[in-house]
Structure formats: C-alpha cells, structure tokens
Image (cartoon, rainbow, N blue to C red; front, top):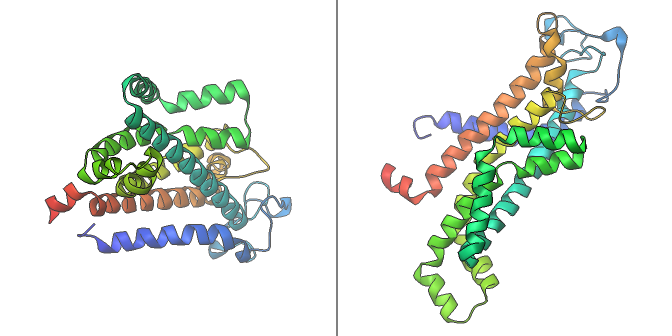
Length: 278
C-alpha cells in the first residue's frame, strides 16, 4: 500500500461512506424500499433521461433503486457484521480453550476445525437451509459459522506463543487465575492478529450472503439485500442494466475496500512483515 496511498485512502473513504449511506441514505429519496409503481417500471436513471424523481432508475415493479440500494446495503452490512462477530467470538473462544486445556480437548477441537475446513461451506449452508428452511435468524447463524475455524486455528497458535513468553509465566507465578491471564494479559497481545483476520473474513461473508441471496436461498422478500437485488436484475441486463449494475458495484467496492484495508493492517500489525519491509 506504500506505493499506492491513494488506493488505501479510497478504501477507507468507501468503508466510511457505506455505513453512512446505509444509515442516512433514505434521506436521498422519498420512496420506501417496497413501494411499487407499475406505471414507472424499468425507468432509466435520471442522468440518462429518466424520471428526475428516481435518481438511479426503477426496477421491474417500479420500485426506486436508491431506496432499494439503501435497504439492501443495510441488510447486507448487518448480516455481515453479525456473522463476523459470531464467527470471531466462537472461533477465538474455541482456540483459547484448545490452547489452555491441551491434550484430548485440544485434539478433539482441532479435529473439528479440520473437519470444518475440509468441507466447502456453501454445501453446508445449502444442506442446512434445505433441512430447516430459511429464516433470518438461521441465515445469520450460518454466516457466523463461516470462517470460525480460521479464528480457532489462529487463536490457538498465537495463544500458545503468548503463553510461553516471560510475562505470561510471571503472571502465572504470581497466582493469577486463568481467566485473568487470558483476558487481561494474553488477549490484548494477540488482538492484532485476530483483528486482521476479521478484516479478511468480513468480505468473504458479504460475498457468501450476496451469493446465496442471488440464488434465492438467502434474504427473502419483503426483506431485501444487495444479492437479492442483483438476482432480480439478471433477467434485465440487456434492457434495464441498472437494476443489476448498481448493487454489483456496491458489492465490488465494499469487498475490495475491506480487502485492501485488511492487507494494510496485516502489514502494519505483523511484526515479521514490518521487519521485512523496514
């Protein structure tokens, strides 16, 4: 990122603008997310000669694309944030438990991690959705299960390394309880590695959510997400391209920006990489 500081600045700007647009983007339009007007269906964006009241055009049911994008961005970001938090907490906790107990507990948990990592998650998601049906709660839990094994493996490794350091041994010698050792002393020292993993896993969850919603297996009407809007527009690419292009651009911009920031954070927080590039 040192060679392209403008790219990093653009990534931070997009990541700052995305939640702001999700929270306050509704002020840009007076239409609701599900408000239909069949007389105004498939209107092009206003800058291409469309209705000035519909800045980015309308979809096949005459719904305003600005309102749809704002609603879709709210849902996609909410699901991605919730899934990332669930995966980070569950996976990190399993990694800490494995590093603490060692023995058969560690072996059992790592076998579970290897089993999860060996299966394509999309197959697990499709199977669970087929058996239990689709609901927002189940879908968020599924997003949380994506990537938890990477947190568990990473947390176990960094905790084992930190526990062997002199400061950790000194804390144990002073009689500190394991909970105090891990939460007050080890966790702050390994948090940087876990934060980097969060930034790398977040765009993956957005892509997974939008992919499933694109296929009709994720967010269901009347709720909407960027993937669902993209799926609605695939049949109109030749006649009403804006239905699919706008959500596609938003997905591309947010995921790419988060990947760029994650790569930058890894360079800044990883001591080995800092030493190598110094």
